[in-house]
Image (cartoon, rainbow, N blue to C red; front, top):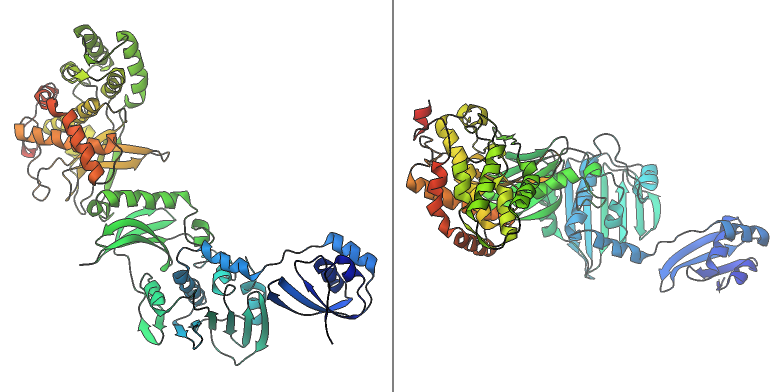
Amino acid sequence: MQATLLETAQEALDALPGLYVVHSGSAAYFPMMAIVEGGWATFRGEVYDEHGRTVTVEVTTEPDRRSVLREQAERRMITIGPEFFITALKDYNDWPLKWWREAVQNAVDAGGKAVALGAVKQDDGTMLVSCDDDGRGMDEETIITKFLVLGATTKTGPSGAAGGFGKAKELLLLPWISWRIHSRDTVVEGAGIDYTTARGQSRQGTRLEVVMPPDKLTDGPIALGFLQKCNLPGVRFTVNGDPAKADLAGAKLVDSVPDKADIYFTPSAGETQSYIYVRARGLFMFSIYVGAVPGFILAELTAPSIEVLTANRDGFRDYHVAHAVERLAERIAKDNLSALKNKQGLIRQKFEGTGKFKARERASMLLDQIGPYGAGALSTENAETIVATVHSYVRGGEEDKLQAMPSTEVAQAMLDQKFLGPNHLEAAIKQLVWEPDFFLVNEVEGFRVPKKFFPEAMTPTVLKLAKTWVELCRYVMMQLGSERQFGVGFVFSEDNAAEAITDEDKEGRKESWIMLNPFKDMDRRTELWRPAHDPDLKWMYAAAIHEATHIADNMSYHDESFAAALTRNMAKCADGYRKIRQIAAGIRTRGAGGSPEADE
């Protein structure tokens, strides 16, 4: 029987018993679908051609036109063309690798212990790509009602498996020339969203295969590269019949987000990598560029991926995990050796000053007192006014404490410079009128920080060193004309004698710290920097300029831009050394020796 093409709604409504064809883009499409839904016609088949979806139906009895009109008014359906799923590939970063991710994830989540991956070139140039596992498999109902339903998933429960989004079939099946699933005794074969089901030979597990076109395909080497980013020790893999390993394990814990993710570093002799590998239950999800490091950085999710990752699992939806990885990437970009230290034994303890948050208010009051200001050196009267006001902020008996305002002698020395204008003076006063926040950081595994380095128990020698570092950093920031708030501290590191650290406060806001390693030799740990010793004081001043450049110019990298900024800032501070002896001499402590032994 030859089918008649219907193009208008009226032609569909007037249809007598017979065979008809309608295109999804025509006005006859929805009335004819209503006739099928009403039981007056039988659906005979469909194809996708240049018109979109072309449907063949057989009208068996004359329709009740009033019912058809009512059905047409009440019911509509969005159809999905094959182009939709080709476009969906663009939702995935590096989809040829992610195809293997989706296939292996399904196999592993189903309990597969032996997984065979294959990619075989066909005579016509197409690629037959497959994943064969020995897991639990699926019955026909599960395949039809879960696996082949967009947005539905078979992965439920608190673990969430490695997926649970119900999007895998958008990449695994639907964009390809054809696809086939054989699970237990059910065989499903399809192309796009159309498929047939049949009974087949019973088997354990599931075999999934698709046919990809010559110009859009994945292959065996990509599958092997994917497995090399995973750690699935309980599964035996082959790629095109050859054994393949998925055993990249994390060695040293370097950071964590409680109950959400742990970040590990695995050293690799003679091999550098430039990415953080984000994984769920050992299965590679996606990577983040961080710059060359001597090994592998692995972010292992400890929360279900559906809570942490975007639907395509190519990015983070959880802010805290994303921020932890971003923060680590910044530290690695600046100094990968210290950023990748083992977390065990790390100390990160902060001691807050009180004046930092009052700096703006205090500076405004001082500027009002001295009145309009141009450029050049301060008048004696204005300098005395500022020094007297700073001295008034010093609480009785606290001049000898670490978290105190600078002494009168120190303030006078810092103000004895040429200011470039009112903005420079305002920035300098803001730096002058706050008490320091102090940060204690230990990056040396197994090293126990002695009590004398904690603010409440500092010995005279350590206190002298800490206060000198505070005032050198303050003076450098004043010279640079920077208003950036910062704290200071001690960092115990095998790699850095001084360091600029970016951290965050309890509310997640970024904080800047300029840190000094108090030991001149971290291996021997027998001698501290001595401010009274001229070479040591010069080195500390140079280190303060270097680390302050990271803060003042907002640069975490050591690159050409940083080198230019450092050179510029060294020029700004070139005249400062004649003052730093005066600053160091004006720092009041209870008396200090020259080495740790003097404090014991």
